[in-house]
Image 1 (cartoon, rainbow, N blue to C red):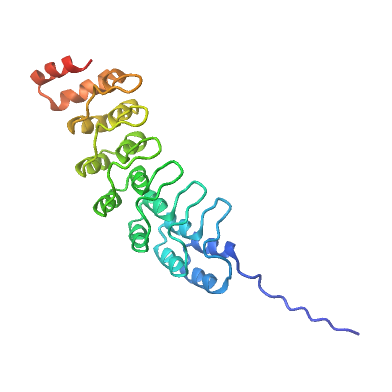
Image 2: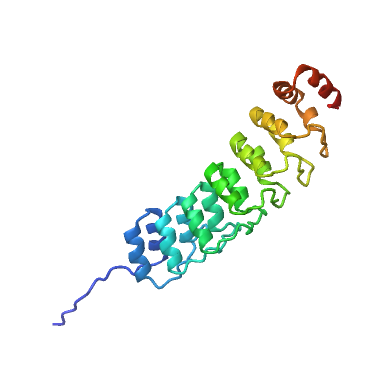
Length: 245
């Protein structure tokens, strides 16, 4: 009679365990997995996100620190060209952004559409983060592949007047045109962001600039005229009306 003993061992830890620990923001589990597995700390998931990218998106600051300390690449990009810094900027995680910057993450890195971290911070609309990026030296009028500046992103996506004012105060040019000739004012008018239209006009946006089709004024006469009336006296408005062609 032969006696066979079978010893059942736990399944070896792998990249999936690494991702799961980050998803749960479980610092202890992440430490255990990092010390146990032999796979790359930058192993991507099915969507090509590394554990560091996921931790950056979640604002799992301690996880970001652990992963970087174990060799995670802060400048690695996913299939769309986004790195951990861009993802943290969009989701508004200032502590993560500061740490990644201290580890060499670059403001000038661009994704496949040409967007950099400041574009994504503007899209996310997180004011403390925008303020930090500007103070840390980001080019305020940096352009993406369509020649959109961060101010244009605000005019397209959020209509956030506080974000727009912050960018303008930092030197953003309200009259820059994208590759199709559109200005932030044109886009704000098209999106019916009335408060943003007012802010742009008050800060020197020219309603007579033309793109390939028309001016901001012709795109929506009512919106532009009503907001000109808000801050221009009646006498001045009569002159202004003559210049709106």
